Length: 159
Ligand code: ZN
Image (cartoon, rainbow, N blue to C red; front, side):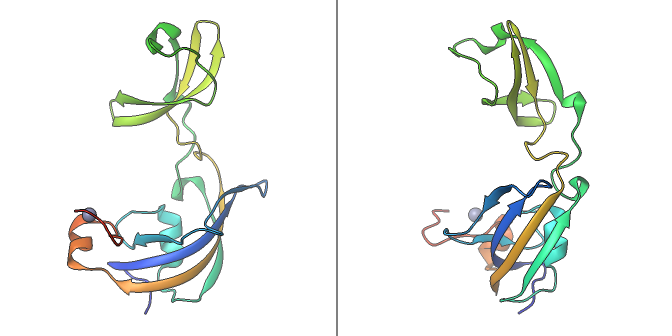
């Protein structure tokens, strides 16, 4: 069965950045299972997988625009540390949920300079070219429920 819209796809993958550092991998774990054509995964990877079948393997490099977007300086901001009341120590790399114009977003602490805290709303992989090694484990039709919900249901899914 080919990978196409409304099919459920299981893949094993290793993701590297330009420097060749492994950022993420399903090795030694369950495969990633997603609903094809429902924007469950980044657009560039979804395009590359279209039409493939189980046991196919591929290597694909994806530009930021087809992955997590370009890095936007405008999404960084310097705010006073008083905005983080109740947080004992503010450290680079900490993540917070914040209400923004685009809804709830994850904000990362990018820099701490005394009372001046630089926050960054970019995805951690924004601006990165991504290199995937993918092996397709399984392709099946999605169930009615899965199509309605727009995501895959695993065993024991409660809704
Ligand atoms: Zn659901």
